[in-house]
View 1 (tube, rainbow, N blue to C red):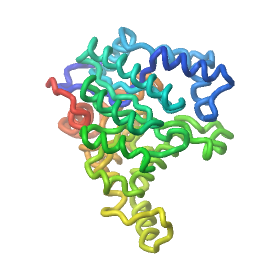
View 2 (view 1 turned 135 degrees about the horizontal axis):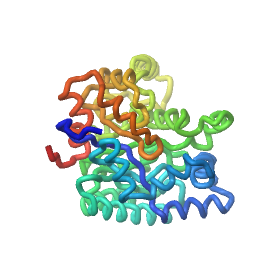
View 3 (view 1 turned 30 degrees about the vertical axis):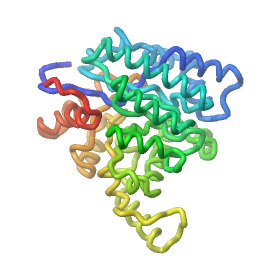
View 4 (view 1 turned 45 degrees about the vertical axis):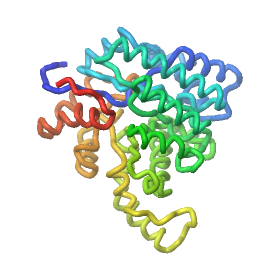
Length: 349
C-alpha cells in the first residue's frame, strides 16, 4: 500500500485476545460448555475447529507484536484501535469477568505503550457488576489512557437499556468517551432459528441481535436521560440506517396510540438519536454502495473506517475504501479525523 496519502488510516474495530482469556474460554468449553448456546457455537468453532481459517484468526488475536504490525504495514493501516474480542468477559460470573477485564486492560495498555504510534484501545468491562464496570472504565480512561469501552451487546440476555446498567452509561457520558456496541451471538431466547441454518454468527445473527440492542436503547429513552452519550456501531450500523423512515413512522404512531406501556414519549424522533448519538464504522463491509449510503443518510462526520481484523483480514479490501468516490477532505475524515475526534486521539498530521 502507498503511504503518501497525506492522512493516517485508522482502523477502529480490531480485535485481540489475551492468553488468559482464551484459557478461560477453553476451560469453560472443556466443562461441557457454557449455558450460553451462542458462546459454545462461536468460540467452540474458533478454538477447537482445526481449519486454516480458525488457526489463522486465533493466532492473530493473541499477537500484539510483530505479526500484527506486519499485517498493518502490508495493508497501509497506520493505527488500530484494539478491543477485546467478543464475547469478551461477558460470558462469565461477575467476579471472574471483572478480574479478566482488568488484566486484559493492563495488557492492552502495555502493548499501546510499546507501540504508541500504532495502537490505541478500548477498555473491557464486566456489565455483570455495573458499578464495578463504571469504575473500571474510569480507571481505563484516566489511568491507562484508553479511549472508551467495548461492550459485546447483551450480557446473559440482558440489555443496557435496563436501568441496572445505567452506572456504565453515566460514566461514559461523564468521561466523554464512546461505548462501542460490538456484536455478540443472539441470546438463548432468540438463537434457535439462527442456529438451525448456521446464521448465528457474523453472517447475520450478529447484526440482528446488535441492531435490536441499539434500537432498544433509542426507544427506551436512554438518550433523553444521557443526551451526550456516544455509541459506536460497526458493520455500517447493523442494518439500522436502512430502516430510519419506517422506524420513525411505526414507532411514532405506536407511541401516539399508547400501544405499549414500555414505550415512553421521546423528545426527538428515533432516527434523530441514531444520527446524533451514534457513529458508524465499516468493519467487514468493504463495499462502496452501502458505505456511500450510510455516509449520505448519517453524515460524513459519522462514518469511520474499520477492517474487523483478524476476523475479516482481506488486504485488498483497503483498495475499495481508498477509491470511494468522495473528495480528499471527506476521505481523510473517513480514515483519520472522524476517529481522532470520536476517540480523542492525538493527530500527527
